[in-house]
Amino acid sequence: MAIRLVDDESDVSVNLDLDYAYLEALSIQLQRAEAPEGSSFPKRFGTLFQEILGQTLDGDIKPPSQAQLRFALDIARELGVAIPGEALRYRGSMTSFIRRFEQQFREQRRRHRT
View (tube, rainbow, N blue to C red):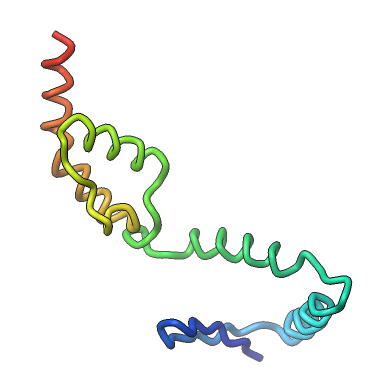
C-alpha cells in the first residue's frame, strides 16, 4: 500500500510504498497524536523525516554545509561581495560561489598577512 506525501504549496505529491503493517501502525500513531493528551510523534516524525530527506536529496540541492557557510561569509567580508540568495539555499550554488572567489580570497589574505 502507499501513503501520499503532498506539498500543498507547489501542488507536488509522491506516493510512498509501505508494507501494510507499517501503514497500519502509522494510522494508529496518527490517531494517538490527535488525542487530547497528544503525542510528540509529529515533531519526532518531522525531525527524522528531515534527516532522511537530507540523506536522499541530490547533492546540489541540499542546503549548504556549515563549513561552506562560514567560508562564504569570510569571502564576502574580505572581498566585499554579496552571497547570492540561491547560494544560501543550495549547496551546488554555494560551491559555485566559493569556487568563483576562492583564489582571489586566498591571495588577498596572503597579502594582508605579509
